[in-house]
Picture 1 (tube, rainbow, N blue to C red):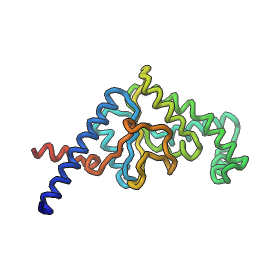
Picture 2: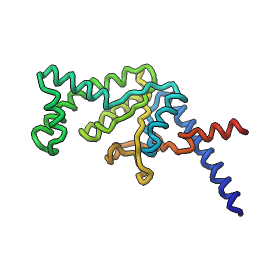
Picture 3: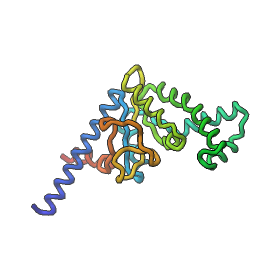
Picture 4: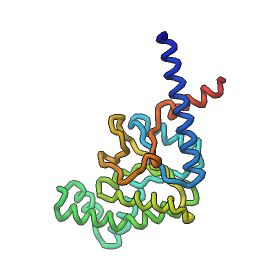
Length: 202
């Protein structure tokens, strides 16, 4: 078998895999399911744009929501935001760090409620703070809510993950209890829309 033939078969396989991936995402959006999507860090922004263009989803930055709620809580407590920022650079386990984590924990319910109230499937982005402050169980609750389908939206959780990692992680921390059916890796073929271009040519 020639090199050209092997190359052609590989390209065909990648295109077929991309269509399977497209169908999985479409099904998750239509059925309001929970689906973790990992992608190579260099393709993260392109993947985000493609998901927004191809599917009826609402992008929500967890980082932005958490920080906004933390600021609101700090203001209510009369605490300086500069003090909060300095606490972020202190040693884990220190009093200031523990206070910071407590503040984040208090912010999470409002963030979670905001996500659950969406009328569209949510594209969850920039969730690294959940791992940093040990709040990944929020994703557990979102997953459980979508599985119960009690009027909740679906969730596509987009994560930048190196190819070397088999399971989805956030900042090196594995996501708790994510089934194989609840996550997929976005390939470069899918992100660059090569499968659709190939279909158009045919």
